[in-house]
Image (cartoon, rainbow, N blue to C red; front, side, top):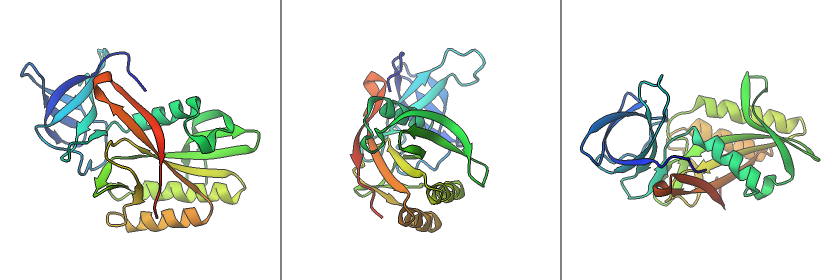
Length: 235
């Protein structure tokens, strides 16, 4: 996924109030930008490091800039705009990158489903029937592994229950981890952060919910992030 406008580069001063970050531009100006990430962003933030942000021409936005990519304490790149995850997956579906889902030629986004008033990220349709696809963004790296979630996620556990229900009704049900981190090469449940989610993920896998992970190639200088390859999910 490539933006038509090049992202701008700055140095991170600090993130605060969850949705805001202060950045110093190359010209020495301090600006406040929108942080499109409700998670903890654990291990993603290094004050004083390079970051990249996009600019909106909307005249109604209080903060016209949006934080896109952070440089982690280990020197990796992390795509911290969680709103891009679904766009990356849609692009990968269109280009056939996600091999296990190539049989589906139609999809709809944000479709209501389940018994807990949920919306599925993508409802895929093909000759073999329907597939319910839920997307989760992964940026937490510890050691050589990526972990999800980076904070307790009751919503994530709810989505697993809904996927298990769809599987029990004879549909395909898939959870896809969108890995926006250049240093992650495998994905694991973050039992040390949310034990309940880890248990629910293993239960879902045992019930037939498919677990996929795809890694993004991050090119901030080209304002581009693209899913490129599958990663193992280790339970």
